[in-house]
Image (cartoon, rainbow, N blue to C red; front, side):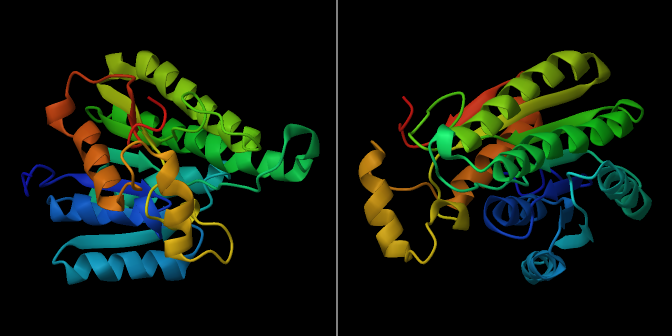
Length: 254
């Protein structure tokens, strides 16, 4: 991996306090970027910044709720004020919600999952694109999921609907804005070694035993594997990838 391929770049990672977001933020920083992580919980974001700085990288955080348009606008404006620009955005903030058949879904939960997973991506992209198109372009990677457009397990209709919509929105935005010099793609991870893959109270070993048999490769993905995919999509090496939804799930949806 080229340790300088994002040298001089400013990168935003939403949902950067845990899981895929934290792994991606650290990977971007190791590749030379100045990274800003965003989310609602300052303590988790500060820990990501601490880890990046411990790796020798540059990072800061901004608290923002991406479901609130004023927050999304302030998030982008703050990054530009601090660093003088924004080159790459990884819109990763998301929630899983509670598993339930469609007829038993709580309506408020449905609205919350759609608000975070879909509207949060829309509002983040809206303000990222408005800045990027006026300042020479950029690259955006949205976190979707193999659950949605690619795979629909029982009792996960709410999450699947939100992530299928992210995949569709990514493609629509990519067509709308490639002429503005902005490449937009999505990564669709399967079960990965992060908090979203575990049930409440479940140990890591219990989670692995439950999920590994459902994956043809025989194991969960690592967060570093997902992060490497995000970095590739955001890099010049993927310069011809536009509107792609890259599944990384060990063959689960093959």
